[in-house]
Image (cartoon, rainbow, N blue to C red; front, side):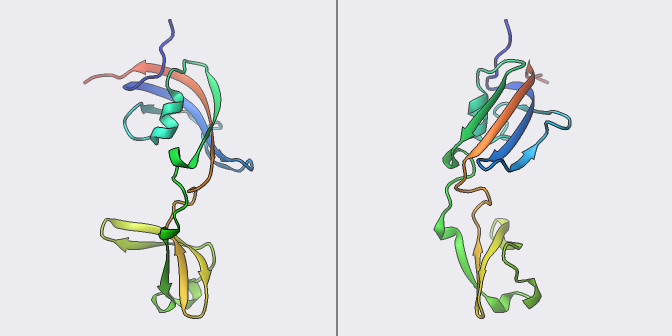
Length: 146
């Protein structure tokens, strides 16, 4: 009987993350497969849950909704900052900046600029998007307990 993916298993797989328009965000199909332990936090729960019960050799494609992927786009995460806080030559739409907050660095993307203010979106760049998650399971093994 083939092992099925469940919490605590070590899984080796090829994967890709894409958008509905066909744009590939990340993929390891052309390189070495990745290995992770189910439940270790390396995969978001919404991605991990789709793998449960798969066996070696399975190839699947899943559409992961925003709520289970990178979250919905939250308008409250779009903030206005005074333009004087930036060097003038840096202000380009789509440019990413890291801002210090109480927990460390918070990345934000410039979405609008005028003479006085800069609008910055702190949402994850993939927030609000369905993610096409393709997988090919290479190996499943019980977790080695040390």
